Length: 89
Image 1 (cartoon, rainbow, N blue to C red):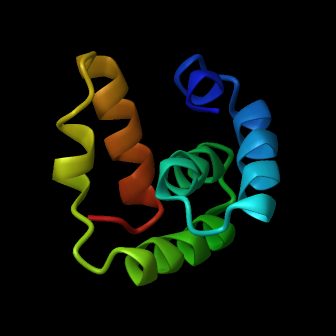
Image 2: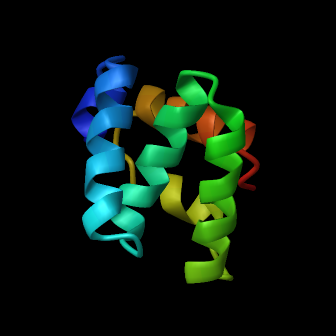
Image 3: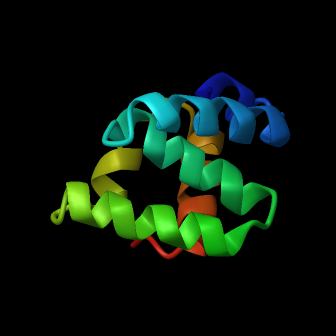
């Protein structure tokens, strides 16, 4: 799913994220890029709903900590920007 997101295939990322979320609703490894994909296609209401779920699952979630593990600066900036649009800080 993240591969779709990072290659600009946002609609496919949304579809893959939604499918995974049906089966594994508490997996942050899916929910975070799924949220970014929703923001990328400007589905902000849904992205903000997932933001609330991320905070419920991990109340101490920090965007900076999540993105610091990314190796490519352009990936880090893309994900950071999209998640900020979704309301994560």
